[in-house]
Length: 237
Image (cartoon, rainbow, N blue to C red; front, side, top):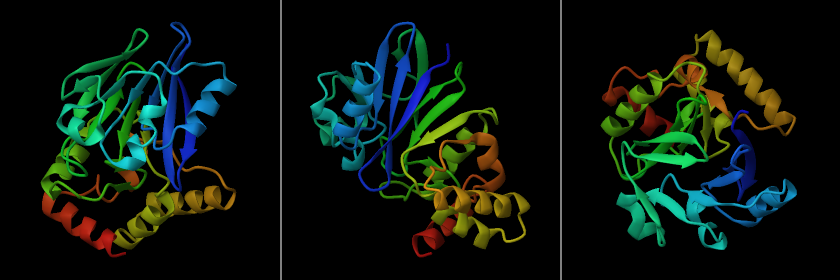
């Protein structure tokens, strides 16, 4: 059976994720900015949370950690900022839910220890606040070169890889993308799709690597310098 993934809106515009492996009965929470919505979503399905995984230290991704009676897996580089970290992780490590394995990717820039969780066999990746639908995270702790390297790594994944990110930012990202590439038909179509989804109160994520390759101005940047210029422009958009 496929890995079951449940999108749980938390705080104002965050998404946290419940992962469930039916074979083992194991459930993992990814980036619990607050706990109650996730605990309620798990209880409604008869699941017990067995582990918490964090992509980075920001409070809107770790604020609910301590409400879970479960071990916390988080970037070793950011453990001091997160608090209790039972399983510190770094680039190249493997984390598991049941028999399913995810590779840990260090993707600095938004924060310097930020990680992503890539389930290659399941074709899914959890990118936190690095790769968004049609966008990328702000460079709070890193450089354009850091984020450009991340975008290149992500772009090398199969187009069908499903991307689960940490925020509902797509409508703003789409408008910026259209300003960067006004003649890009894929972006224009995506803007219309995103506007329709939001008007209906529907989420715009997850997305896919293939879709981002076609419509994301940061993944489409040809150099770190260009990405940096676009990031500054987006910050002031």
